Amino acid sequence: MSATAFDELAKAFRGPLVRPGDSGYEEGRRIWNGSIDRHPSLIAYCTGAADVIAAVRCAGPAGPAAGLPVAVRGGGHSFPGQSVCDDGLVIDLSLMKGIRVDPATLTVRAQAGVLLGELDHETQAFGLAVPAGIVTHTGLAGLTLGGGIGWLMRKYGLTIDQLLSVDLVTADGTLLKASEDENPDLFWGVRGGGGNFGVVTEFEFRLNPVGPVVLAGPIVWNMADSARLMRFYRDWITDVPDDLTTAVMHRKAPPLPFVPAELHGKPVVMVVCCYAGPVEEGEEVLRALRGWGPPPVLDLCVPKPFTEHQAMFDASFPHGRWYYFKSCDVDRLGDEVIDTVAEHAARIVSPFTAFPIFQLGGAISGVGEDETAFGGRGAGHTININGTCEGPEGFEQEREWARGLWSALAPHRTGVYSNFLMEEGEERVREAYGPEKYRRLRELKRRYDPGNLFRLNQNIPPAA
Ligand code: FAD
Picture 1 (cartoon, helix red, strand yellow):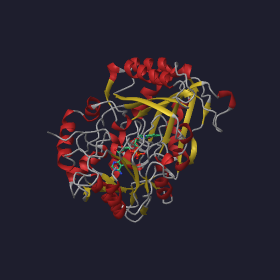
Picture 2: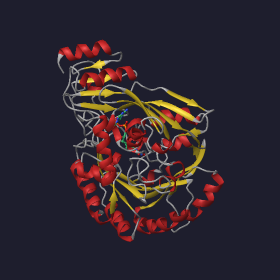
Picture 3: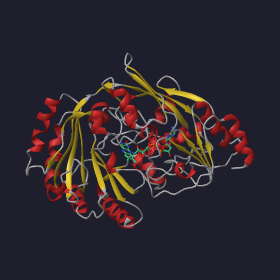
Picture 4: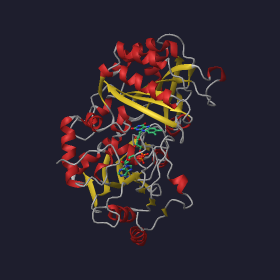
């Protein structure tokens, strides 16, 4: 970035501007996935919409830094690290932490730097929640723009299904509101289309009652029982209530305080549950799962504050480890899918590799496939194959393991959740939306970002 461009931005900008060599630069260029090592030329820490407008205008087509790559960062949890770039501008929103709950209208406004745990903290004070993800240090912004799946999704839908409006700065530096009534085409696109259309500065969501105590946590068996457990599970979930959302997870049991020492490092399979209705009803629903076969080796599914359940996986997916992902949706857990998953899970080497198979359905499929840009509402499950190491040592092996399982699932794959993609090329982005929605997204991109300023994302190129 030229000195002139920097000086011009500095005049219009209130937050910190951090360049290579400045204090805080090394920390500021790091994101959650430790395998990403990029060196931006400037990190612009926005304090509000005015700073976002200044940064976008600076790098936009008519700005002094036109042509500079632009990355947009909310919580910094992009799997492939698309929120940081080499030799470009990072528009960082992490200082924008405003949250305002209105219990009278059952709505909440949250700025783009809010993390999921921060949002839950405010909303749960009123026994309310927005359905969102399963790790509290994930950014609300990136998660919402891709769709947002988590423990409340079968009851209240995806995060975008409770989204009422966004404030967004488009590529020409204009702040727009998008909702069902204002710029509805844009509102359709931001509900699943990621950061392609501009920088969201603020979100407004509808709130729904949750807990504050829910029946939630993992019920754990030896991994040797995986194939039998999953056969029971796929039949059992066909008529569980939408209050219940579950995920099957395979891994080596971690040495966490709530895991008995004799299990540490042992291969296990667990069904993680969250029953978002009355606890006694949940106990009744889970009775069959608890009794399907061999007794669980650990049962941590107990009444607890929703916020405690939300934080349960935080320690398993910390900042700085090396993570690699391959993901896909499947319609159902047929015998071949189950046997493939069980066989590959038994080959996990790293003590940190853990992969969830999320149960979808319920309220997610209650919204029409074309009502929002999100693709795959009819899928039965989304599988997030995650190979993890402490650092580079052993990473290649975990990566090969993840690719191996994903390839073996090829005959059964029906799509992919865009927030679970690495940098896998245009074909895979198209797969996330399907051909018709992808075409519509490209038209929208042409309208709002014809020069593809916002391209460091699961990119939708503007229609020709
Ligand atoms: P960032 O890296 O900051 O941003 C990712 C991308 O989003 C950016 O490249 C940019 O294109 C876009 N973006 C971010 N902020 C803005 C903005 N304000 N305006 C416009 N574009 C923006 N997903 C789920 O659905 N459910 C889960 O339970 C879940 N769990 C996760 C747990 C972990 C530990 C991690 C790492 C990820 C998880 N994800 C989950 C995936 C998650 O949804 C994506 O990684 C998402 O991009 C994270 O958002 P972020 O703001 O933290 O990311």
